[in-house]
Image: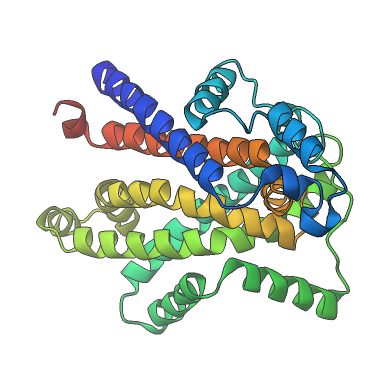
Length: 318
């Protein structure tokens, strides 16, 4: 297991370097003059041509792209992500203020998805082709077909019209005011986790149906074991592997969905910050936030690989 763990950790390094390199290059070759955008565009800028050149020199835009890349990569290694062109504050400080919000939202979404998807998938498999199965599958298809932002707006409008409820506008951490924090995050987490619940539940159903038809499950039932023992000990343990894989693959979708959901529910997380940074062409912030999202997606997939090796010992010895 130690060799397997070290191998997976070593492979994450080139993946991260490749991902942040692609992000940097894309941000640098995008059309438009960053200095001009900061000054308000062609009509809003009141600086002369000489002043604009001095501003570009001050921002380092006159240097070759490979020099800027090496300086930026060196800064990342020292946890120096630069200064926000929009707020004028260090990027790592701005990200640090908003990171707990996004982390809480994603963790709640993953937990809710896991708590809902596995029982729904198992129940749907055990009740195959019944009314319960069709009803649950219809519910899951909704999660795959309805966009997150549209569902979020429907939830807000429905809660406002039915219960006169509005999400608290002032953000409270889970440590200072747990109840207010719960009210702020429960509906965004449900909306964000709806798609992952649908994908994971459908995968659980398919895996359980395949395992329930296996000879060893029929043997276990023929021995007179209780149905709960057959389902949870013999069937679910062998059906969990593809479900774990799907959870890892869906993490990228979860993080990208959080960008929109935070904006819809006015949560001051990294997603809202990223949208504002893109609007202000704040390149250092966009690079930092997207790079951090990539880091978490890679970390989530690493955890999935380790979990895969834990559940299936054959993986560790290949």
